[in-house]
Image 1 (cartoon, rainbow, N blue to C red):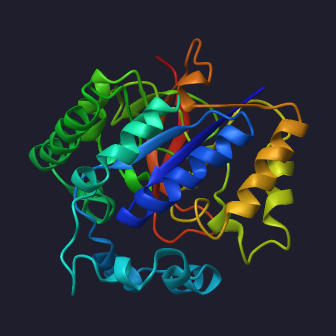
Image 2 (image 1 turned 90 degrees about the vertical axis):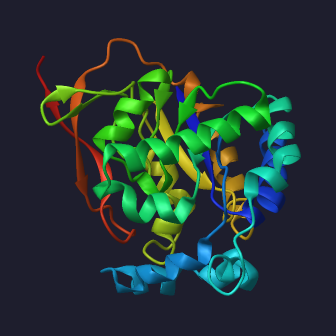
Length: 289
């Protein structure tokens, strides 16, 4: 059994501090992982407009945003200019790849993508994705092979752009699949996140780690961590998870190592996930070709 570890890197602080910690922690446990980098400006402070979304306050009350992200990060894009993550952190990004981990694209501007992409047109979407891919190539000297959408937010235009990638991980779901949009197969294979994230479980379960281990008791899975959380205050919980998965017989791998085989076609839909505010891109019903 394989368990794919996907690390979403959203902020400057997460890249500078969380990523190196996670690299060492993963190496300690002989674990592979895929690091998906935000490559443009850190505008985390602009995410505060989400306070008007249903469920936002309940999530914030369970996981301290200030504790995990810090005051400075929460001012980027509002009272402080948003630093360019790709320019300032290219050495950290390259070191992650050189340590043997798969690297891919998360987005250009995390807040901008997460808050707006679901309702944007082809021109807007392509511009954001081209900015991110061009920066990735300038950092790593190679074209990216994978994309994992910020906040599990995407649209059909992004799916069409992703046909150049080996696979993408934009959705929450049950197993790898070929995405179908409006009745048409569009995009590359999707390797969805199959398990809840730690921050979705904290405050809702007495022992989030054991709950996750119970959910991942059979078959291949993909778990998404965040450099700002598991690379910070939640590092101890994450290490317990890694040890628990290994004890259960899982091989901890990057998401490109999740077997694809003959993939079913599934609709991509939007819906809610317990413990997270807003709607996310989900693996919908299977579609017969």
